[in-house]
Length: 378
Length: 181
View 1 (cartoon, rainbow over the protein chains, first blue to last red):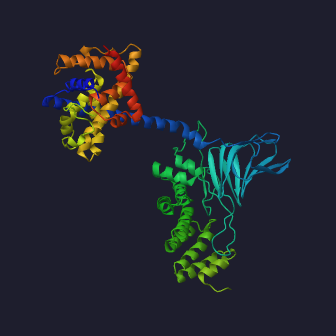
View 2: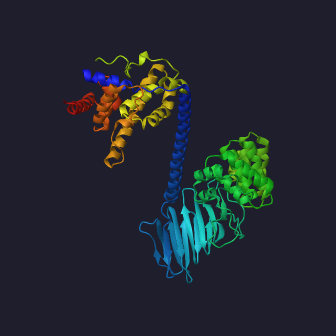
View 3: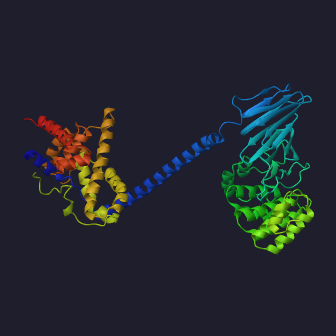
């Protein structure tokens, strides 16, 4: 450092300012004001970024989550089939009176032109959809098949039961016949219920049944209030449906929606949450044909998922009592015996088993029921 | 290094008064004159001093709350002030390229406590500094007007010691050239 540097430094020292206390107070107030202003600007900026992110998510996520549309199979008047390359659909039979296709997996929309004396049948597991001229979507999953009709009417056969679905309705069916849990139990064919069609639907299917109105085409009145949890449930995505149900609140107070909510709860791994809607059906809609199904499902949840055989037995007995001539009656009574036996109520199990054999002597479940009821072989 | 005795080098914080870093009132009263002096000496003009000093304290509020050692308050404020001054000078240099910032002249710097000799010396210094880059101006100011060690100058500028040395030498050469008799 030179002499000149020292002189410059000396001169610079004279630039040190001095402030009064009052000035310091004003300065501090100004600093605090700018600090607050800066905080507000930061929050506004962060909010802006957040809003922008939400807008981007809203713009892009729906299209990402919905993915590509359901591929379509078009069947013309001459029964010519046009489908995407690699579609999981194979032709089982093609003859003058019948075109029979099978959906091996996934979802496929079928658009069928009116046929002239020809039946078009689409199979997905044990479920068969027969049409004359219509458009519908079949989704085959591991456990169930859903059919959504967008135009016309279709006849769905699941086991020995048939259901007619009209435009705007959807049915969900077991992909294969149910194998009861009881030992040596016979196979019981699936059945379906009709909720909205007003057709010959009989309540009850021994597992996860439902036929509910699908989203109706534009212009149709009396549209059910849209809710995403229902849409997810109809797609078979019960985990997402459960999350959506938590956000959107309680289902509508009517049997179909309550049963659907119960399905969403138990199939998404929340069996205890299915109890309330099922009990609501039993208490509020006891005269409804689906009340028996609600009781039967309640019994299954209590016995299989929650390990409560005593209450399960009561539910199965109630299912039987609500529809003693219904298709669920044999299963309900048989499972009541099973539940009573598991609850250690030997006497009740024996009594119910005797009643079962008396009412359904031809049932293939007789042997299993004898075992649970500790009845001696005839 | 011999530095005029009344200058308080930034790194000699151990000699400073102790204030609670979280007490803004105490920090402002203790260090506002010091920060303003540092900024004014680096800038060589009055017009931006108050704004930069206010900004220094505004930005330091959150950081001061995290300081546990009261002796770190002064260097913390100095670092913030140097960074903001450097940023401002760089911006002004850019604006000057478009004719938007006037060149230095004596009326831009108030020197109420300076005598005639001091005013002449300061005028010599800032005419030269005004023609150099922002980094060179700040580096030279820290080294010779604040009495900072070379390592500390490099640290405050975020550059290597050799770079700091080169910048200071460049200004020295310009000073030598300008004041050659």
